[in-house]
Image 1: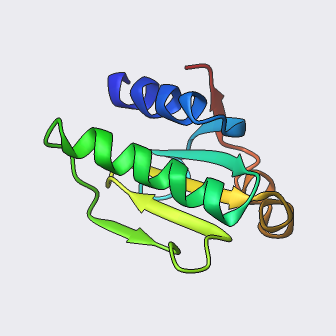
Image 2 (image 1 turned 135 degrees about the vertical axis):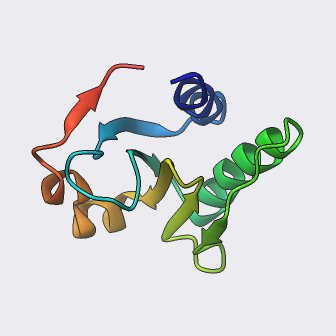
Length: 109
């Protein structure tokens, strides 16, 4: 839970919008939590991803995989138990992960 809070705070620091935390542990075995956030542009999306990864790496916490930095429409950062999805607005609406996991519990962090 501490890492969830830390990631949400890092996203808020860089002005991510519409941050949602979903407990998907009962719905999938790929992760326990999804954090979904919206960026205003490709530059903003990359800045959010870099802020998270660089800050957490200083604490010895490294993602096992980062994907999507090139185009930055949808950046996925995989910390195993927590997967962060950073979308540009139109791509978030298109993929609509919240709808796909609509039965997941929304977490207040």
